[in-house]
Image 1 (tube, rainbow, N blue to C red):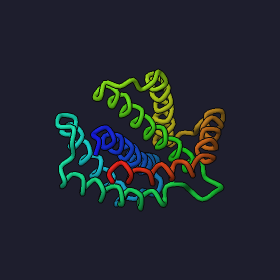
Image 2: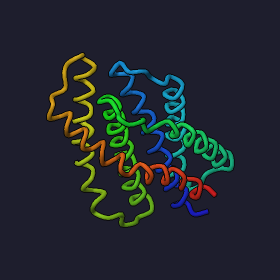
Image 3: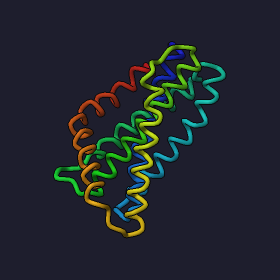
Image 4: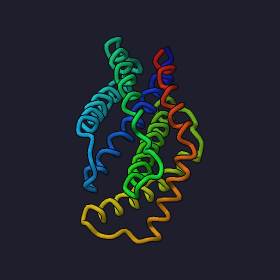
Length: 189
């Protein structure tokens, strides 16, 4: 199995776990119902992957034990993603959760792809470098909105509309998000 293929799978898997983790953290910070088990499971998985990836970067291989564990984490993460998207119509808080967690997940994916390019000395395309600032600005926006709600303050109407527009775009592509989740298995087959 190609090391690059495994690393790609680790990046994709970590980005989906990041989505779940951030979704639950936003719920927690804004006083919404939090899936405590989902949050602790996602945190545990992120911690495990964050321990595996630096070792992988040194050896460029997963041990059989690591590979089996990654497959278990992938199966569990697929299950966790089943309840990710809300029923419509969505509340403002649900929109915030989806947009925020999507942006953080995509930011993690983008950073991973840039690292993959460095690690395997491959050109990854200028858009990945250009997206760093894009994700940084948007995640700061999300953090500010979460902070506003955490302080029990009103979110301005124009900011709510920006978030609603981003939410519409994500929901329009949700089938692709779930299909990408299903592709993770192929990286570890």
